[in-house]
Length: 449
Ligand SMILES: [Zn+2]
Image (cartoon, rainbow, N blue to C red; front, side, top):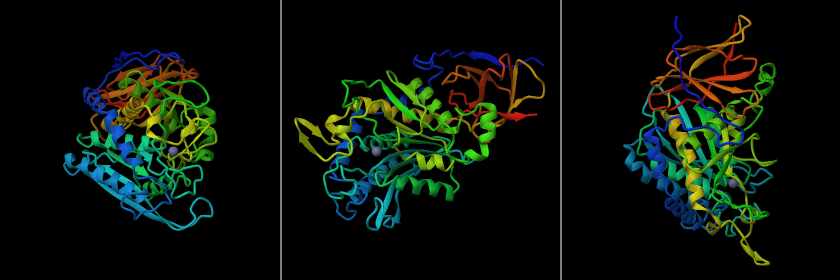
């Protein structure tokens, strides 16, 4: 039988070059990306700052100040956006009571995540995508519940990105479900994200990817003179936190220490982000988070989901976790005036493009296998068609073992492919693709004997 694959796309990369040439921009996603507005992002952040403090342990009853008023406002915005969604976007505060933990919760706290769920239009597609930022803010003393804690960048930037994605995406239809969330309790120990991840497990949500946005709207470092709004970091775990012991043998045998689910998601964010957002490089960092620090994707990673953290390239620590003050002419505090809203626009657009691409794509191919029955210098892969979503075909992806990103894509409409590249020397994966070029997350093959 004649092989029916077409060498339609060959993507060449070098490690330092902007990763991949444009494959195909879906005009629908392209137009959504263009709607992301630095003015509306600034508007959300000014409003968030106006609540004075958004400390998780601040008041929830005051109408104008504190985390309670802030989360009510976020849900009100979600509800407003939902009016254009034909009832598909629903918003609520998901609350739980936290008891004193001897750490960063000193009295019982009513913790609330501000949630909006945009229901997918394909009822056979159970995938859920989550985008998060954290609503809570802090000053130098994490237990200070009354001092001004504007939290413009940490993490007004992430919450603004969530709101802007909800505003734009709620007017459109996606096959899969998208959850927009401003979690609380991040600064007290990732408590809102942990509560959400446990809800996802309890309710058996099929979370295909989670994007945590935290500190992504400032373009400079406090120690150096770097000012740069052309790079953003995406952090992903190396060895999986979830079931590592169970999978250690196959990870070791096949050299898959760089191919966990979150790392695949990070590659996807890089490829799609750079496909749709101009003048921005998505820099993959091979770490779950910044050195010895944590974030809201971690409870999801620990629950076995693919989750990454998106954060600005350089952090300015004069404007993070600081009491508002001026010392020797230096202004400390997390204020909007220190932010770059054009940079935040681009970083928000990376999120939107990634979510829109994933939620429009067919589900991933199933039963992806690499044949090892005979010793050969070529590689044969087989798979099954996806459960839902119209797949026009599949891409087989290939990269050298030392390459951080996929280097070639081979298109086929069939469910098998033999390539003249040895599985000894390359990594392979398969992803589904629809007629508009929207790809699923790639699946690494298991062994078929
Ligand atoms: Zn933060």
